[in-house]
Amino acid sequence: MAYNILIVDDSSTMRRIISRVIQMAEVPVQNVIQAENGAEAWEIMQHEWLDIVFLDLNMPVMDGTTLVEKMRADKVLRTLPVVVVSAERSKERSGLLEEMGVDAYIRKPFTPEVMRGIFETVLGG
Image 1 (cartoon, rainbow, N blue to C red):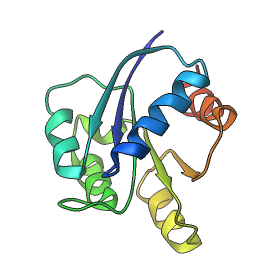
Image 2: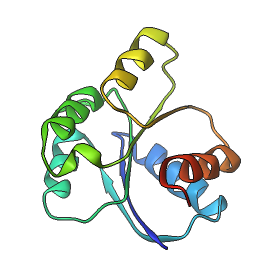
Image 3: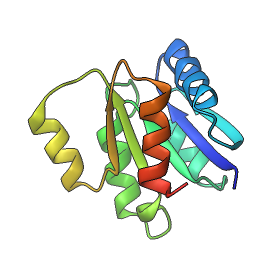
Image 4: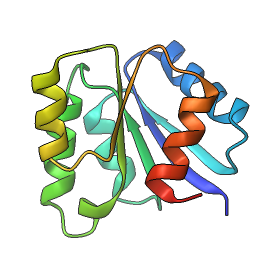
């Protein structure tokens, strides 16, 4: 099965890195869609079929936490897997995100092996 992936980060460099690491992890990908912030991601989610979202926390316009809140309140999007990708190491914030239903939390920097493990754990593939 090939996955439809949404990468949400205000840094185009980080979006490319995440996409490249997924490729290096040899995860089967059908489509990678990118968004610069939570508001753009929300618009994409309204009309694209997605299997998983990789999400930064600190972004302009709409941050990652707000996007997760909106997703979890939405009847259709509440079960869409979300993986936070962040350099932030706050246990309080990661605990809050876990309570909100975030499926996994990757700390930057990360390796292809970590990424492959995320796909296996979150999507079972």
